[in-house]
View 1 (cartoon, one colour):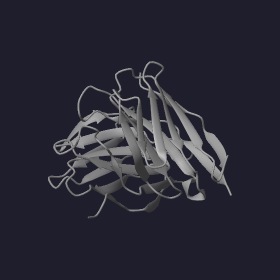
View 2: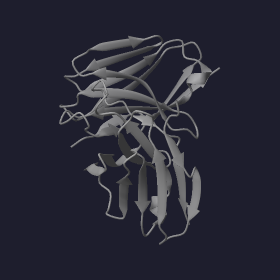
View 3: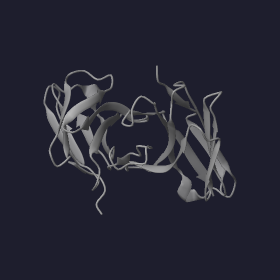
Length: 116
Length: 113
């Protein structure tokens, strides 16, 4: 049973460019959350998708956008990249319908973005 | 607002017990979690506790929750070198079953052989 898979694992961009990160949730999960983890810090919540809609959003600018597809996979898009966007981007999946109520998040290994 | 705080570093000798502490501000938190992150990897769930519980034990791990003081701790018995990692405390509010999970800054645990 594959867990959460993310791609690409590493990428380098320059300021002003745009990036798309991809995530496939764990089998049986229907909800995807995205987090940004800067070096030496805890994960910061970006947004969460369920039923192809953004359901909750953290304190991130509109440059950060996302999408969820009918197969529950998700994309994170960041426009007009800034140096400060350099971070590990983590995708986490969970199940609302089949969960125990604890909404346990299963994380992928992350996509490390470097902005030069 | 929601905030989770942890001490940033902890160093223990192999075989001793480790205690990692966490405080949170959201009094409506329903679930509190402990995650572990090893270098270059994502976060791995260690354990979680529902807010109406005081304690949960799972093999070498013991979680204590003081809801009045909004204080959570993770005790690792017989700490091994393989336990060296960053440990994150996290909390989820009560608004809905899909409420977001908020993480603390992480505690870096170093185990000295």
